[in-house]
Image (cartoon, rainbow, N blue to C red):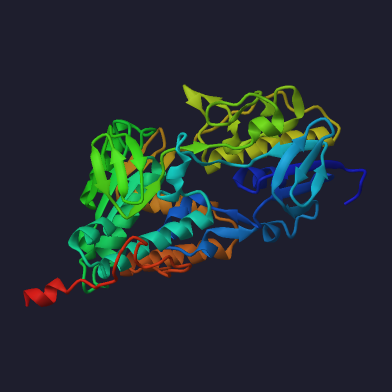
Length: 437
């Protein structure tokens, strides 16, 4: 790389950031791809890490490996602290980078709507560390139930509450129900995992609210067929160590999972512009920041009008935006005028899986459910995975799990104490099966 080339800094190695960098592969530019982690994460399959279907390495890929053959890309592992817009400089915690053009593709985190203290008891699912923490909590719940001294404590440990019935909540509820009622059914002696209670709490009138009502109804029916309790029009008012307080009453639960909202951090401070309630930047039609044509914002961090709302925060949308901005910048650095065409999002469909052989897909022109939708969902997700070996490995892992009902990543690491700190003893409950005999 030479100092005479235009400098493009991309903040965030998600789908949008990667798409922009790849679009600029043939441009005579210096690209610095900045991320606080050294891997690209395939978030749509993160729930399968959380429920022990896949290991973290199956859904993440080293950024440097992705760009090892693209010589105009430099990868920088650092966390952005601020952006000096006047001097066109990105300031990180370990290094700073000058830019001629800046692309911000930082993604979003889970939102607790002003109740951030709930996160301690109900983690969300946006990062690998979230998935491994949830996996630990889910698997430990069964272990604690196995040695619980009291029946009510056992019931509490075997009760799982998922807040939010969007795709993440629906997929988590179905996966935990299958884990308990199928994969773990014969693994314990003191407890019956099939008695596990999985509760999905949703403040709105239906699950998967962005999908057509008929598919939403089918998804709810599939969840209930797995034994999931679906509580609609139910607001969460508090989350504690003991359980979840809702408008319908208190649910005693040892494991709570949050999937009810997202927010974007730092945009207002970094860019000095107004953001919407979720922290997203309201960008121009060409995805640039108002008053700063040298800065583009894409993916979850951008508020882009679409139909009666905004472009959804999903992988295909981020990839399209990244490709659009990358192409536009390629035209600019080549000395030409960028296309006057505004960004137009092309929706490719909504997909959600509920469990084995159960999924719903809305392509707009076609609505599918059941086994066919489930296989299409799997193929669509494998198609988006980075690399060559990884998709094949994930497909084989899924196929093995499908045939055997076995989970491939049921390891508990970073243990918390087996009993809660307020428990006065560690007595093991007598085996009820032995007593009955």
